[in-house]
Image 1 (spheres, rainbow, N blue to C red):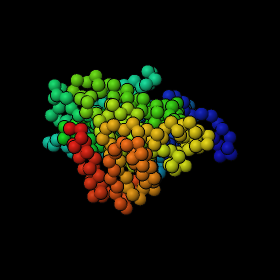
Image 2 (tube, one colour; image 1 turned 135 degrees about the vertical axis):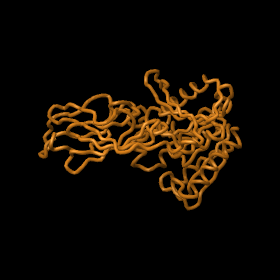
Image 3 (cartoon, rainbow, N blue to C red; image 1 turned 90 degrees about the vertical axis):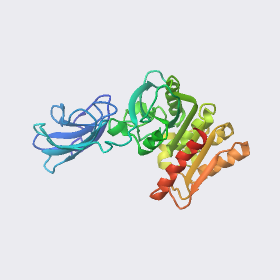
Image 4 (cartoon, rainbow, N blue to C red; image 1 turned 90 degrees about the horizontal axis):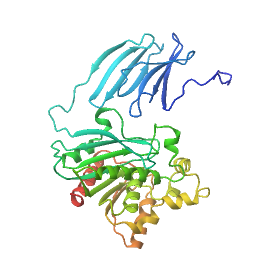
Amino acid sequence: MDTEGRELGQLTSGPWVVKDIVGFCPATKSAILLTKEAGHLQRNIYNLNIKTKKRTPLDNGRGVHSAQLSADGRYLIDTWQEPELPRACAVTDTKTGKQTLLRTASDPWEGWYQPIFEQGTVLAADGETTLYWRMVKPADFDPSKKYPTVIYVYGGPHAHSIEASWHWGSRSWETYMAQKGYILFILDNRGSEDRGRDFEQATFRRLGQVEMQDQMCGVEYLKTLPYVDADRLGVHGWSFGGFMTTSLMTTYPDVFKVGVAGGPVIDWKWYEVMYGERYMDTPEQNPEGYELTSCINKAKNLKGKLQIIIGMNDPTVVPQHALQFLNACSEAGTQPDFFVYPGEGHNMAGHKSVHLHERITQYFEDYLK
């Protein structure tokens, strides 16, 4: 567009997301972009010539990059990670494309316990869409043994879990669990970010339904692995992941033995308007969707061990969610467990966070091992 509001033409097109416009280089009349063009799991830097619309890569073509542009647009600082590279930093001349490596970080885990980090794909429930997963195995993994396996899930829009960064984006808790003898499995279902409009909008007005179908494709894949104990499957997630955990435990009660749902959305009509109605429309516009996605209606289905954890002062997923689910369970005769952190919000901080993750782990130790 020009400054008068006239549209001059589209600059980019393709089956990939533009993540950010880093800035502009007046000398070359080029925009510096961060895009997903090189791969769904990557984020890379490109020089886009405004006149010709030609894109030129400005990084090594691998990993997850971030960029900071100089005031005159001529140079950028490129900082990135790769699955086997914890961090590297370089300065790039945006005019010539010449890159000068400043520093490559050494492996901070060298000489310490290191799980096995793997990444792969499965097909979504539509039979066509490729989904990406991460698996974390114990350092002493023995393929002849059977391991209890925990699916860590978020699953909601505006976020993703798998990327081509250090250890495929793995979280420290996964390492902790692998050290205790678990396999961890994490899958980005349809509805998660950075895969385009159609991929994300597949869940519109029916949050959790397509997502659960895709997560179950991951479960079916796990069942093909001789070292995964299908009788000892657990699931854990927070916020939207807590909603997914509760939904999976009550929709597939014979599949999951143990679950820990943190700050779970139970019924979308109680969630904040900004987010809930963006993805569900209003309860008046979409009564069938709200009825279908509510965990209240499924409280009677609970069979396995489910622990719900909340912060008592959570302003995002207010305590009403968990309390109404507990009430529904008491009326139905099902038996979840419940733990609350007084004074805490949607996420625990400081020593409460340590206590929280010990509690999550201990629940699996008590009921999944």
